[in-house]
Image 1: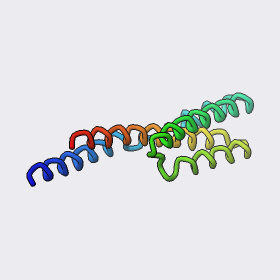
Image 2: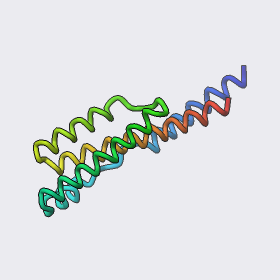
Image 3: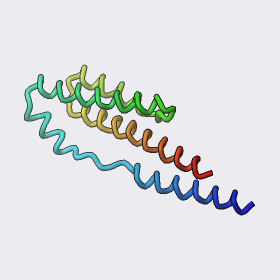
Amino acid sequence: MITKIITIGAIVLLSACAEMQTAEQPINEKAIATKASNSKDATAKTDATTAIAAAEKARKAAHKVGYEWRDTAKLIKQAKKAVKKKKYTKAIKLAKKAERQGNDAVAQYHDQKNAAAMN
């Protein structure tokens, strides 16, 4: 009985730590906007496309371990639409958020895997 209580407590504690580590970091929108607006359209489009590719890579890694978050693919889809509308700053912002979610999902997988190993 005491072992179960300790195990449950450890899982709760690790989950709380994981949430603290994966809290979204603020996006420096001004820096993104400046970079995109100072660049030619071709460069801005390349930056957006590169950001989307990085987000897709992170999403696939999360999917591979079975921890893909609900909104990650939606954010990537929105970023692709923004590129088509030539809204490169918005596309980069959305892609960076999706990439962060993918990376956080993989981190969550590892945290949960380690918590399960403690049982």
